[in-house]
Amino acid sequence: MKAPFRARLLPVDNQYAVNEDPRKVDHVYTKVLGNRGDKMLTEEVKWLAITHKSFDHGRRGYNDRLAFLGKRIVDLQTSLELVHSPLGVKTSITADHYGRMPFQHPALDGLGGLNETSRAHMLDRDRIAGVAERYGMLNVIRWRPKKADNIRGSGAASVLSQCLYAIVGAVALQKGGEVANKIARERILVPLGLS
Picture 1: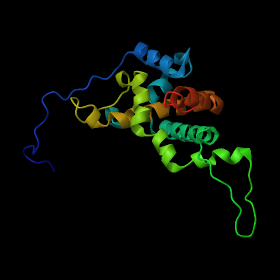
Picture 2: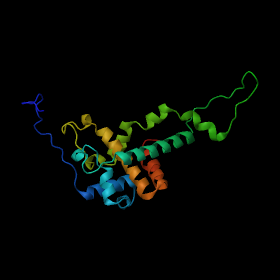
Picture 3: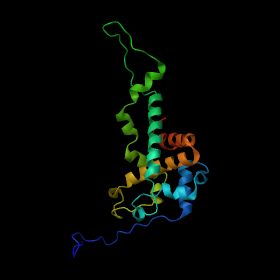
Picture 4: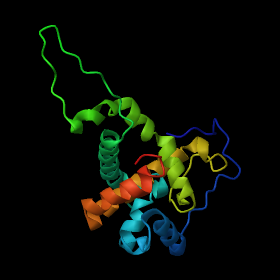
């Protein structure tokens, strides 16, 4: 059932121009994936990875599942980098009241730096979106913002981070986990200051 009149007025100009130029997409993929990055994925997967479900009401396919896989890969690589980073919290090892000493090994020294706060800080949505913006992804992603005159307020950070994760997920499916791990470390974690 529809009301005879609108309670909220329609915005005068709420049209958002979506990129349709494959050369711009190839240029962004070259920036994100490195030399010959535009040839790493098939055309269909390249467009799928930068398509949000808000575009065309989700009729054409979108990047949710690719982003899920990519986020898991980036999470794992972040955890590994935090464990191996020299910035780990050092704890003093003391004997308990029975005189027992806890097990010590150099491989366990970095575990102090691996906690939810440090991971959440490194993988903050706005920081990931900043990396995606530096690669120029805002100009090529396919989505429909709620308000075309307020891209940030319409959730651009969330869409950008999801698209960057989706690219990592697409690389994992097309080229394998080893290549995806390398992309996650070199193209996402290094610009974030980790590694």
